[in-house]
Image (cartoon, rainbow, N blue to C red; front, top):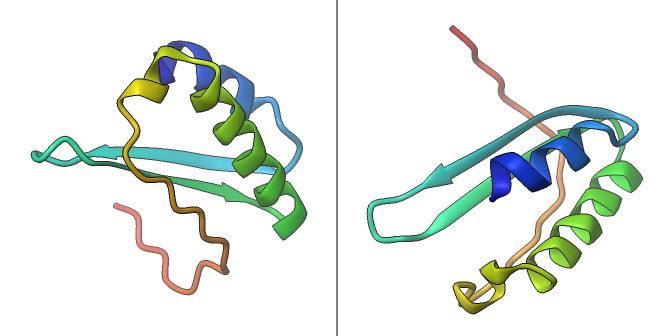
Length: 77
């Protein structure tokens, strides 16, 4: 659902750089969205909250925490 429905929406947003979704063994998911500016990041957070609210995923969500900040370390192989 996230890959088929949400990713195409977020990829089209202005300032989009990357998106990561990590699924832990305990059923917890964490996502990271990287955008050029804070306002663009905040808009993606709004879109993500709206997506979860209006999808079947809402029944799976226990807690949502959104944080914005600057990337201070980046390493890619």
